[in-house]
Image (cartoon, rainbow, N blue to C red):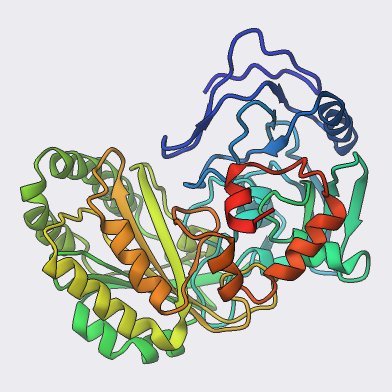
Length: 446
């Protein structure tokens, strides 16, 4: 994607086209800006209001939905809001600008001897994009990045720069720490951090029924447990990550490259292409893939265990269902795949999180199991996502805000107890819907 914005104010000499990481969403804004400060961004928002333009900020484009699309409006790029503002060791916090990527943040934290408590499994996202869509990891005691937010700086629809925290404008803080881009543009985030720690990783294959029979114990005994099931097989890859006193024992360089780059990316990309071209080959490919990941153990700095490189591009739907319904949901999902004529080449990812108090969190008020389904880019949908969504919604599932789903405000109001509070807050801070778009009209109503 070429950049045409070179400063706070930018002209677009030729039509600018933004697209997301997966390539399934794009937008053609009327104007593009890459501000380097909250004050510059505030001026851009005021100019947009004068010109009658909607305003949308994008991060790294790792959302699969059109949550950040901005056809005909002002598109705000994060490229120049990337500074580390402060580290407060006494308070256990770090303040960074919104466009910093999680990868860069973790490098800086490691150098300072600090760490986030939990993460998702990739770190290409910007900080604001990750918290604004509810990015989460897996954990017995810790879940989403939004739950680790302690304060925010945000530019509102009237062009003011607001600070919010539990002590300062707490209502705005409660909404904006997972705000969907609907309340304003976040320019800085204060996150809770802790001393740098190690995780001991244990990954090993298991059978599907074996995982489900032991799911409660596996999720309770391990600090971070997840697994991947390969459709058309009974094969799963399980991951157990627990804190360790060390010493560090990272994967040997060759083994790490072979497993995480060559097999998981290069070879997997080729397998996915074959499966897309010849769907009948998918079950055989799945059998081979399910056996390719062998048992391994290693101990490393937490973020290098939580995350892995993801270079094979796909589209994704993920739902959060009540933790108590997890095993039933997964059995229904397997039965659905087995009785269909679908050919599903990507594994299903299953994670857990404790209940939290973030208004729009998919884990709000209940212990949660996350079930994510994927399709390799360019693969025909076949009704797979629609079938999975029917199972999830039958169990009161909440869709991930940044991933594919078809739910609207009526359904979402029935599964998110604080959605009405969020909508009332939005009426207060953005009554003219300066930060709205078609996607937000669908999921929030208007």
